[in-house]
Image (cartoon, rainbow, N blue to C red):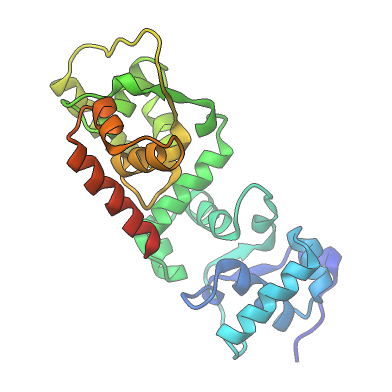
Amino acid sequence: MVSKTTVSSSYNIPLPITIFNSQLTVLESVVKYLYERQGLTLADISRVLHRDQRNIWHIYDQARKKYPKQFEATKSETLVPLSVFSKPKLSALEALVLHLKDAKLMSFQRIAELIQRSPSTIRTVYLRAKLKKVSVKPVTFEFPIEILNKNLTVLESVVKYLHEEKGLTFKQISHVLYRDQRNIWRIYAATRKKVPGKVSVSGSKLMIPISIFARTKLSAGEALVAYLVDKRGKSYREIADLVVRDARTIWTIYHRARKKYER
């Protein structure tokens, strides 16, 4: 029999890492555990997690259908405090990954094993969570289309511009572009070999928001082309002229991006 937990003490409930699995979302696992193992009402859970009660009911209903059996009362070496999920800016998965990486000092590989996700997904989620916590936000930055050229990839051009023209550190750029910091350093080092001098731009006929690269399914080139077609209504020929590429290449990139979103 599960003892009922009071709302006042529920903020201190430690969640065993074993409740997280590939069948449920992180939030579904938390709600199911609190309701079935800790005896909280759905109203209590909504208050503890700062979510709407109707949403909590829906989450629990989904969890019960996906995973009908109760979580086993097994001991776990890794416990996650419930307070981790009280950060309103972060999703439950983001909050969990951030806690395990920064507070528990776990590797992406270890986190992936524990909560049954892929390491690449964990890395992406972590960078997204860090971005929400830093002062540098993607919507505050734009880059002029003229920085793009045939000697550099789209990502190389953007990294070079952000570092040299905007003065961002590699760490800040990694947060803004959802990329690993070491990868950003390698990208910048490659740009200096290809194009040693600064890219000088005085005025621009088209500014592109950095936030388009938050589409983690897409490469930088795919994200740019998809934005120019879908949001700016540009033709393949117009985009080809802007980014110094062949129109047939632009067509291929756009349709590749669309296929990734349809999967």
